[in-house]
Image (cartoon, rainbow, N blue to C red):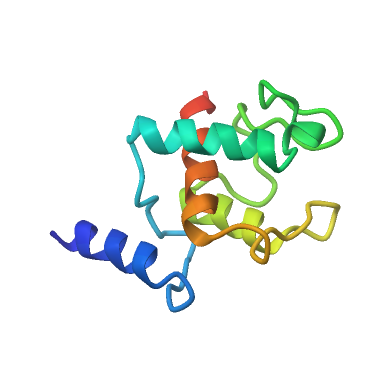
Length: 112
């Protein structure tokens, strides 16, 4: 029940939600969220840096276990939302919290 309340709170009021490294993905295990994330990955041209198969290029490989900024759901969310000092742009002003979580779902669905 607590997870359901947390998920609802994150989706209903993303501006108030504090995402930490330990924050679980509210869409974890939901294939429709991963599919939506896949579409967003293409729409926002994430493949331009991370490749269509997420194996990297200019940006890092998102399928391996080497994650400079952390591979937990909350860490991936933070990296997408806030960007990184080494080239990853911040997407928090271009994507909703729900969209970012969907991209996290897609990445997690392809992670080895």
